[in-house]
Amino acid sequence: MVFSSFIFLFYFFPLVLLGYFLLPKRFKNAFLVFASIAFFAFGEPSFTPILLGLCALDFFFGILIEKYKAANSLKAAKNTLILSILISSLVFAYCKYSNFFIFEVSRLISYFGYQPIAWTKVVLPLGISFFTFHKISYVVDVYRGTSGALKNPLHYALYILFFPQLIAGPIIRYHEIADQLSDRKFSLDNLFEGLYKFIIGLAKKVLIADVVGHTADQVFKLPPETLSPSLAWLGIIAYTSQIYFDFSGYSDMAIGLARIFGFKFPENFNDPYLARNFTDFWRRWHISLGKWMREYIYIPLGGNKLGTLRQFANLWIVFIFSGMWHGAEWTFILWGVYHGIFLTLDKLFLLKLTERLPVLVQVFITLLFVTLSRVLFRADTIAHSVYYYKSLFHISSPSDFQILGAITTNYEIFMIVLSYVIALWKVLPGSQIIQSYINSLNRKDNIRYSRNLVLVRGVYMLVLLFLSSVLLASTNFSPFIYFQF
Image 1: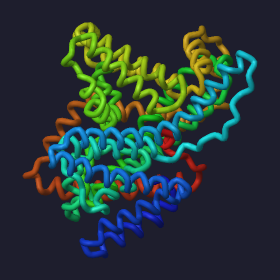
Image 2: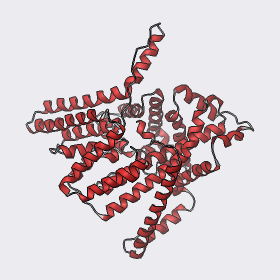
Image 3: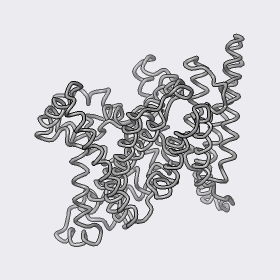
Image 4: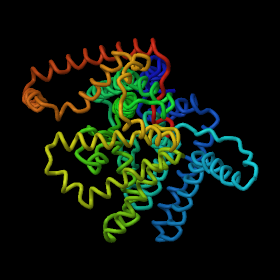
């Protein structure tokens, strides 16, 4: 079940919302857990019992870790932590990487005349990357004493299984939400702000990402060696827009849904295409993943406290891991290496070199190289990406634009342009004047403006919901990109 589907929008979500607010407070968490299990089981019925079993295991591991620490049995606590992480990691690795490993081994032994290994492909369960990270965050935070172990299994199940973030994040670290699991309040402000955030996310997905994504899909379906430069650039520019509005749209919907039920999730995107360098980009893009990797991988490895060479090594480990986390393909590993290279160059000299340039130039250069990295993210194989890069930089022929009409439409081209205007408008000429005027109106003492703003936003929500529903009814189903991770 996905957020941008009729069954979720007009059946599941209204029923869950109604049930949640009608039930007494003592039953609300249990109801959300039940709804979350139903939400997951709708798409992954066979994996649901395994997920629940793993959750139960880590719930007891958390209690054991806290008990051992209270008894000053630090070695036992550490061993329990390692066992918990090892089990979660092995299940994750088996589901995500066994097909890749068997394929590569079979390809290797075939060179020596042996038959490929007989293997039934493992189907990747939805959301396994995200709930694995949540489970690891829980036991590590308990071990560190950042937050206490949960004694109520419903509270723990709600942290791991809560349906807004179960499938594709954001990745919520346990200590960020621990207090909210048992103590949160409903308010009309939360309801309105949550619905507004959710509908904005829905519009990002349906009105922008799915539209520009059609152009990207059409281009990437073509043999990459036959692409003209104009088509190759069109495809990767469209995909760069699609992946941002698709994933940030999902994140907005998840954050909005959580807000409706009283949870305050941190933002997952902060205008990433306005980044002035790769370091800045990773402070703005998929923020929850960046913070998770920093807190649970980079800092435990020593961070930047063990010398420059060790810092660079830790950085590369993190981004190779990030590439592997995104997918069991060599292209994702190379994508991680690509970003690791630019982050290393930032620390060596690029930051000092580029900070003298105008902001708009810094943004353009960063966005260009981020866009080029999307080839690795989108291509099926390394060979596909190599041919695609060649096509990007071949000399164009006069007939290149004649086949554009078969690939895309004027409306899709308009939406691609509009998506970049939306993503970059804060650095466009005149935007600061407009923003300053809006900020001057949006003051706490400007009661009239505040009332009008609520009305305008209400109408805006209804219009976006109507347009999104119409487009959903007239187009094919399109899952979120990050569901595959």
